Length: 344
Image: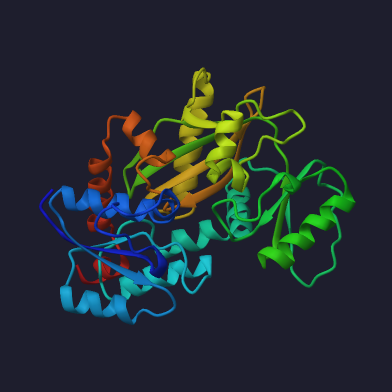
């Protein structure tokens, strides 16, 4: 790839330093993804600038107007603290006719809104746990078709925000209690779905029209006691001491029957296209002991930290981290945005 002027867009508090000297491990963990991306792009010879965005697009617009980047490498996951507003920043880039990495606005909209996403998956007859949404300010009436145990989470937040052992509930009283928690503490509507016992599998997909499916990855819950539900809580995903205590790891899925792998491949591609995704995404599945596959959610623009699942699975497919980032830029440069379709 030729060397590109690359504008990396991040949250205002996550602009990484030039190097790691003098920073604590806790500090580094906050902006590890942003550092991995910017430092790797620089090592690959690209001309890199980084701009932080909080609640205004003034700095972003100025950087694009003044520097005229070849591509924006989008690492933004929210705008003004609202997760579902990241789509508007990408739409702003399209209005400027500025190429960018990652998903288009429509794909972000459909995947970020978990209730809308699940309705679309159900329409396309893609297997997903039975679910319902409990809106804030509306009385809780539990549909009879839902069977306990149930899993309660936010309709919009990601990175396991608001997910804990208490998210799996066994009766109506606990269900109402957890819904109230999501409404009041997380500040969103609550998505309630039937809890599926089984293996937790992640499938990375990248591309626009022609798709590449990465090796199936698995979260292994190690020695967690039987009294705890095997779910990706915030502690399980981000607390290193907790992971070490119970031997929680993620790695290439082993001993998956060929029909299950084929099913995961087919479903991942169907989901990607049904949601209009582009660039790259990760699909989260549960597979039961008898081989039934259920999609839990689709994640547009998953974490790109060098040591996280998406990059690790790409590495297992023979795609080094620097090559992965360059492929994502190639997808961004070739994405057929509407302004390109209209004006060539």
